[in-house]
Length: 94
Image (cartoon, rainbow, N blue to C red; front, side):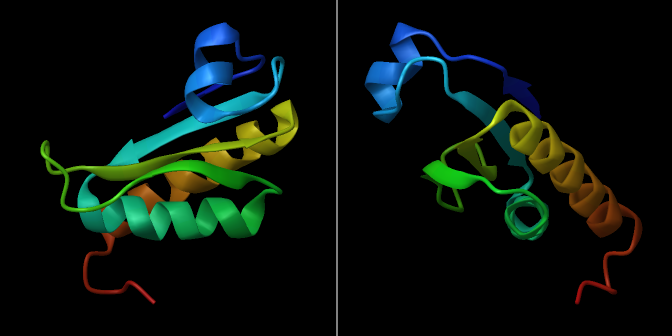
C-alpha cells in the first residue's frame, strides 16, 4: 500500500487520468482488501480508478484510487487500519 504523489505518462494513459493526479495502490488478501477499501473510501475523498475483483489470479483484492495527494495519503492510512483490524479481529468485522 503506497501512494504516488504525481502520476506520469504511463498511469495517465493506462488509467485515463490527467497528468499530475495522485493515486494510491491498495492491495491485500481478498476479504481484508474489501473491508480496507471500504474504510479508505469513507475516510478520504478518493475515487476508484481500477478495481481488482476477487478472487484474482494471485488471490488478492484491492484498487487503485485517485484524488489529491493528501486524500490518497489518508486513503492509504485508512486502508492499512482496516486490514490490520481484520487481521487481529477476524470474527469481529462489522
